[in-house]
Picture 1 (cartoon, one colour):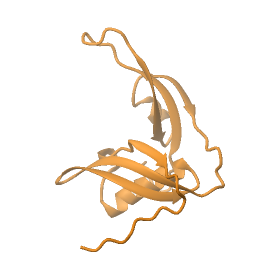
Picture 2 (spheres, one colour; picture 1 turned 90 degrees about the vertical axis):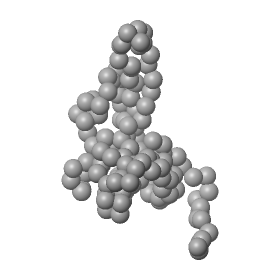
Picture 3 (cartoon, rainbow, N blue to C red; picture 1 turned 45 degrees about the horizontal axis):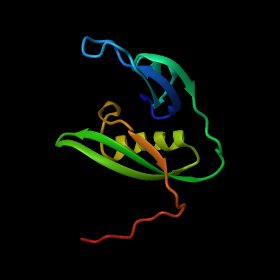
Picture 4 (tube, one colour; picture 1 turned 60 degrees about the vertical axis):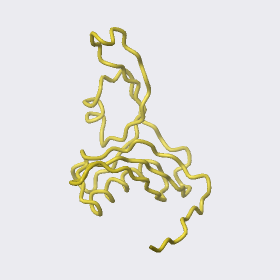
Length: 130
């Protein structure tokens, strides 16, 4: 994501491990990857099969919970972000822009580990004062 107007797409990949003396047989596993286009996606790992994932109900507002580790000047941090958006892809794009603007991180210094939907639509944390 180099430009600010570029949106991400969600892909479901079947990738395999690289063969090595330590692991002589290759095992396949499935991953969900957010990438701006197909070329960036294919350059990341040894991809066997790839398909784009589309949202089932893109006109309904949903709450998402995103888990991501990120590297800063002082070390590695883990973060949970709660966002509202119409699609998973829109929420991931919003998270990337938010991390770049508020935390001044580069896109290569963090990755989205898990995107899940909140069960309750009106999830809100109580205000905490220290």
